[in-house]
Image (cartoon, rainbow, N blue to C red; front, side, top):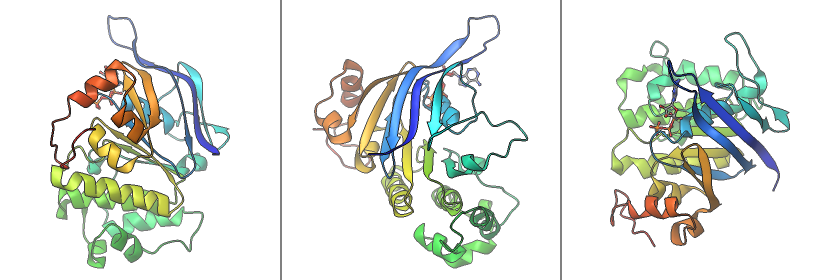
Length: 259
Ligand SMILES: Nc1ncnc2c1ncn2[C@@H]1O[C@H](COP(=O)(O)OP(=O)(O)OP(=O)(O)O)[C@@H](O)[C@H]1O
C-alpha cells in the first residue's frame, strides 16, 4: 500500500512555566496509506490532539519528521498559505471551531469548493445531501442547526475542498450516543468515496472498531500498539490496550459487546 502520511520519530513538547517541558508526543512513528481509515485511541491527555495538530502543521516538532504525499509538513505560520496543506482537512470536536458563525452554510461550502483541485467534483446541494441535510440549509447560519447537524456541516465543509486526508479530532465526542456511530460512519463513507484517507481520533475504541481498518493505541505520548482493528479488539497484545478494552461497558451506546 502506498503511504500517504508518514511520521518518523515525532516528538512535540510544550513549555510549562516553572517546570520542565511537557512531552506530549514522544517518538511516534506511524504511517497511513491512501484510502485507509486509521483510528487513534487513548485516554484524555495522552497526546492525540497534539499529534493531530502536528500532522496539520499547527504544532512545531522538537524532532522527527512528518511527510505528507512525499513532502515534509511544515509548520503553518500566521501568513503561510501552503496549498498542499489544504489537502489535509481537520474536523474538530466542537464544530464551531471549523465553521464561521457569520457566513451561511452555502457560502462556507462554496469556499471549500473553490479550492478543490477537481472543480467538477461537487455542488453545494450534492454535499448537503451526502451529509443528510436538505438543500435549504445553504441559506442558514451555523447557530440555526443542532450539534449533530453542525458537525455534519463541518464534515461537508472539510470534504468540499477535496482533501486527500481528513483528520477528525474527537469529532463525535460532543454528540449524543445515538448519533455517534452515524456521524462516524458518514465520515468514513465520505472520505473513502472522495478517495481520501481518514485519521479518526477518539477515546472510544468501540466506535473506532466500527469505522476503522486499523487502530493505533496511544498512551503517555507513545503509540503502544497498532494493528487491524478487529485483531486488536479481540486479541489486544499490550496491557494498556487490554485495560482500555476492559473499561468499555458490556453494552455501550452502540450496543456492542467486546470480544
Ligand atoms: N498548549 C499547550 N501548552 C501546554 N501543555 C499542553 C498544551 N496543549 C496540550 N498540552 C498538554 O499536552 C498533553 C497532551 O494533550 P492533548 O490535548 O494532545 O491530549 P489528548 O489525548 O488529545 O487529550 P483529550 O482527549 O483530553 O483532548 C496534556 O498533558 C496536555 O495538558
